[in-house]
Image (cartoon, rainbow, N blue to C red; front, side, top):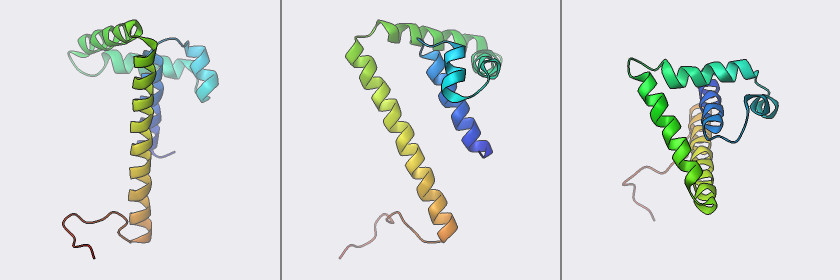
Length: 115
């Protein structure tokens, strides 16, 4: 997995953990990543992002707690939206790679005349 792919996976795992309802050990089993690594990533995300990192971590935890108070259908829709966003990001990355490797434009150019 490349550096960017690794960072995306790291972000995905941390976000999933921060949503709550799952332990580090469960995350380890699900993703095949040592729970200590996940714990370190979470701590980095919460506190090592700069001088106001602790405040960001507290704000993130507050959002997660607030999310738990939402009705089940809203939480489900949020999860589906996040999955759709990740899927879209993946598809765009695949198109970028294909365009680069095969040197052909796949996306339409804006403003191009259609016949």
